[in-house]
Image 1 (cartoon, one colour):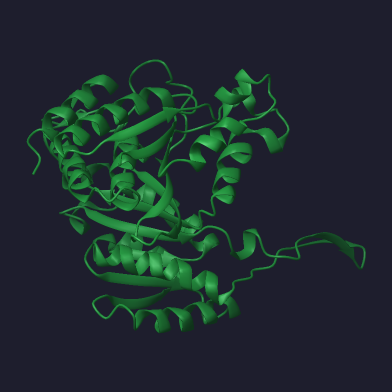
Image 2 (cartoon, one colour; image 1 turned 180 degrees about the vertical axis):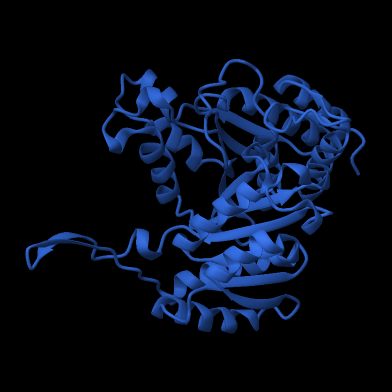
Length: 371
């Protein structure tokens, strides 16, 4: 049976980089002998324009996604739609409802810096001579963002605002299993991040992490308080493998990881639901960066984050690990050769500045040599 995916190119540079990603997907499906059945649909600002600002998430987009094994998502949003009602703005009205509709509770966001790009990282080069590769696994549907009660009121003639951090043990178990399984496919090291010296939710988190760890004896697990984890990411990121943490902490740490990696244009992201019987996940895969409307249509955007989103989709939702490995190797070979889109170009010796299509062509060329 073919793998079925729904393609949602989005706005801004989304369609441009999606075209490159689909070319790469077509190439690996031919090389590794599997079939992809895809359909393309509107989302975000593009959907708003097509529906006279009625919705950024048309019903047909949801229905097509329900029939798919995975969603390949572009970036959405831009100044054009910022003044619309909040509930129909592209990010709030499309991205978050998709996550909720499909129960996508686990966000996997790699923060990697290839050895050839260490100069682009704000971390001192001597601290990361070989680059680094960290994966942040963030719980998406619980914690202080969704806990009740929340609101504002007057107390003793003074405005007071309040949010509630709530976690059920089952929610913690679910995200930990995703993180341990991810660690099994990497260096088998997991760091659980909490604030157990202050927060009751973190005490439960740490207790649950220790219980779940027994089921994964091959994985070495340690614990870090979130403030220490933030420090270690800028002090010794190459000592970390997989981080797992709750919603708020993961939101902050994953952005820190993106910053120290040097460019958002290199970083994919995956949002996963419950594992199926075959161990694979329904997921939505997207670049970590935005729609970059300021450079849209110029053909200069970095397509690597979208290409690596394809790699994550192949790995976690379609079970095509060899194809995913080949894409990762082709991207690294392209960067090692000195080819750079504008976001990565520094003018250093050995660098060549290229555009979106040229980057895609180089990845495809290196893909033919990848193991």
